[in-house]
Length: 131
Image (tube, rainbow, N blue to C red; front, top):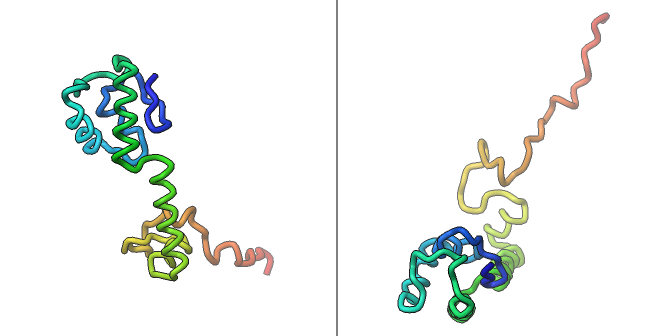
């Protein structure tokens, strides 16, 4: 099992697909990384066929040249925290857990806003039949 940037890569997948399991590396970046290592790692190789040297090489290249996993997550949360602290519009939207990139909220936005809370139906008193 290959472990890169603290993530265990799935054995049966091709390397360019498996690298996308690392936070901060998508398919295009994985292809770019493998392009740079073309003379040492065959692009279509599966993770189970990697040698220890190749895993070490991948690990060193990714850790030197790219922000991934914990470092990238810390940077993203620090950016969000900064928006909230300086009271920017984006920070205001994050603080109230509303969409921050201009989407409408009159309808939709259920993912960001959470479950629907019915307004008014619960507060009405039931009508008595005898009156």
